Length: 97
Image (tube, rainbow, N blue to C red; front, side, top):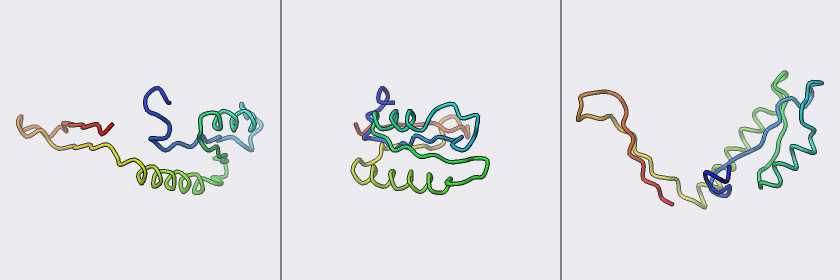
């Protein structure tokens, strides 16, 4: 993840999705340690019962708000390419880094 962009510049939560399943592949301690080494929060949810899904999204949105407050977003301008009379979208991306 840091290869593409430093971890303090984007919001990320590592989420375990089979916390109550006997088919669980990764122990809580291992997943939480992985997230901690990279500076990300770790949360678990049970998709079979849809428990804690809202809590994960709320935490991610809170993280996005903090990130945007400290690091203004990249400027991305998406508009139709009118030079070809085509409705396909052309992208003009300006990086603020």
